[in-house]
Image (cartoon, rainbow, N blue to C red; front, side, top):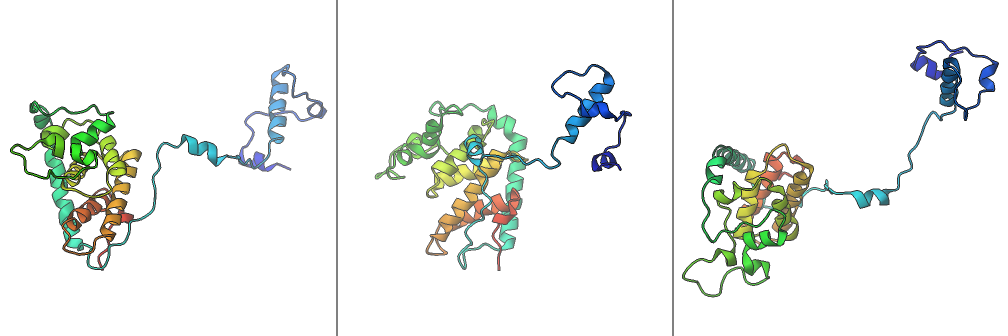
Length: 260
């Protein structure tokens, strides 16, 4: 009677079956081709039909480099959710902007920067926080100076995401991740502009790290939106916009606002 293995995997080479098989030594080297084939057959017959791998989750957790949460967003409070038409219009505008940036990236990246613009190295996380958000926000001071200064000092209030700056960024995800995970406790005009600009420069298809970053961004925006007390709050349109772009343009549909 044929075994299940024989039925699924028919033999390609004839193998003699006899008493020699019972006395076959697995530890010794085969002395001829027939003995080698019998040895392989005997070893295969001793393998269990089902093998279960015993994995220690703690060991895998130490090697985990990307944590992509699948949790959804806070639902928008009543009256705070944008209409579907508004969301579609924002996606259309955003798509046009991305096409324009792609078309003109080489031109803007070739433009000379002002002497006061010293872009940090991509790996300089602290430097980018100061560069984007300004010294005052970085040091935890007031986001605006107490008295207006005669000349705007971008080192204090943060450099805007000029096209001549963002077009020079070969990789925007590390900066997007840094602003989202470590600095996005509240939405300011400066941080909102940077987040929008970095999303506009984010290449598709998304890398796993970028996927995780934008989902975290949408969830944080939804969390901040749930704390707003009025529909007239000036932060509401910006928060809705960032959630909309992540969900609708980057196709994270489970995070999308669903108008009633």
